Amino acid sequence: MPSTIVIQCSKALAERKLTVAFAESATAGRLSAEFSLCPDSGTILKGGLVCYDASLKESILHVPKDMLRHFTPESAEVTRELAERLQVFIPADIHIAVTGLTCPGGSETPEKPVGTMFIHLCTRGKSLAVRHEYSGAPEEIMLQCIDGVASLILQEIPVISEPA
Image (cartoon, rainbow, N blue to C red; front, top):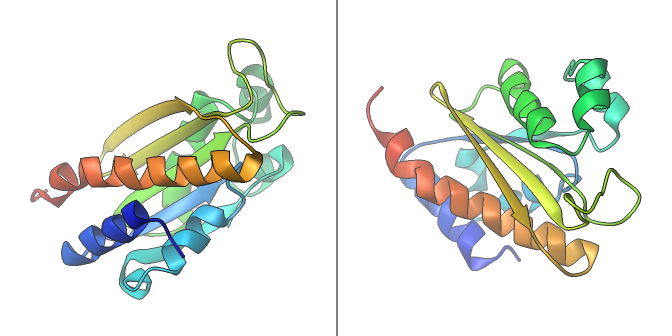
């Protein structure tokens, strides 16, 4: 069962006839799955791409190898690139990308510890980056991030809903 905020977000999107698509790395499809369980999923969720492994970020979404090497696959820069490139593959009103570190073994550093998650939202020429540090087990970090995505969308809906 999706969290209350994911359900509220889905309902708000449906009320405004807005659609969403996801490019997921660290959330590995769970973000799309949570939104798919909402009553309004059929009208708001366009789909998602799971690019958990860095090679898929490069081969499917065409993120430059140099960018992955320089910034790491789990970075604000790569997350933005994923959100921007997703727009070519899935038409939607809102495009969201998520990368990050739910467990050890990625690109964690003292400045970017496990629990660091990057979210990037693209809509109507607007681009918004968010970085959060969550704590807990991998699933807890993932679920906190999903709620963070829903909160971000709810925050931005008034702007997105304005006539273009």
